[in-house]
Amino acid sequence: MSHSELVIFLLPSILSLLLLFILVQRKQARFNLPPGNMGWPFLGETIGYLKPYSATSIGEFMEQHILRYGKIYKSNLFGEPTIVSADAGLNRFILQNEGRLFECSYPKSIGGILGKWSMLVLVGDMHRDMRIISLNFLSHARLRTHLLKEVEKQTLLVLSSWKENCTFSAQDEAKKFTFNLMAKHIMSLDPGKPETEQLKKEYVTFMKGVVSAPLNLPGTPYRKALKSRSIILKFIEQKMEERIAKTKGGVENLEDDDLLGWVLKHSNLSTEQILDLILSLLFAGHETSSVSIALAIYFLQACPGAIQQLKVSN
Image 1 (spheres, rainbow, N blue to C red):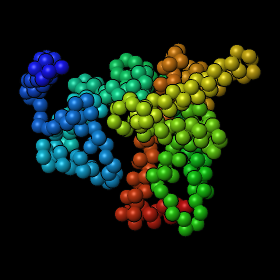
Image 2: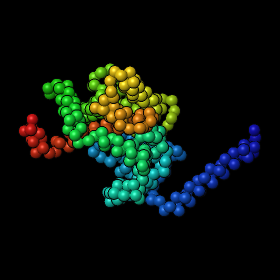
Image 3: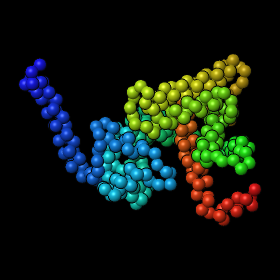
Image 4: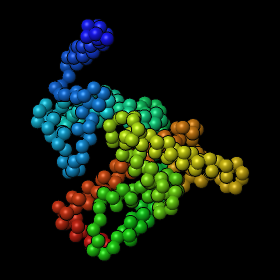
């Protein structure tokens, strides 16, 4: 193929890309978007955004962008155009008007891992129905009779594993505690058992993919997370089938001491909906709680009065 033929062959593609670029620029100007950088095609600035940083800071990515563009800027994260806000006033306004002026949503890549029936992805009536099911399970009486006792049990279990004058990672211990608590509360899985440890292993792989670049290619954290999600859902479904089979066989009634039993007994959700609900609550309960506990331990050193109170209470 000659140079002239090659130019003629590529010209339509080049013109199409230029036209697309112009349309995007015009669309952005029409919506009066804040300043920023959209980064690379598809990936945008996701890789830079996901670089590790201290939990006590906002990270280098945010610091550089705020210095360059201000507290509100545009970007492309997880494959989607995004407006990033580090402005406390705007963030408060958004949270106060969620469900009215603003609708909570996640990038499609994250929704693909969590599942279309996940409470973190659903909006509107279906989100409300799923939330009601979870809140009904976590009634005040159940919190007192079941959850608080299990919290104390799992706490003592973690503390007993520490040797005198040993060094430990607060984050790792917090994750161990919250995972064991959630696994027990959701599916009555005992800590240390082979099936619980295997589930924890798959869950760690799953979590690494949720907070990774959405590249569904062999060897990427995202692809590994999708595989782990499939394994976790099969595990949960197996537990469901075992309980239903025992009930049909007249061996026992469905217990509702854990979330899985409660949902099977008190809801009309489909199997797919139950699987996504269980996985989303395992994800939400584990991640938020473990980070909060780790940060509480970190900042405790700056409050001698609180440390003294803890010593007195013990």
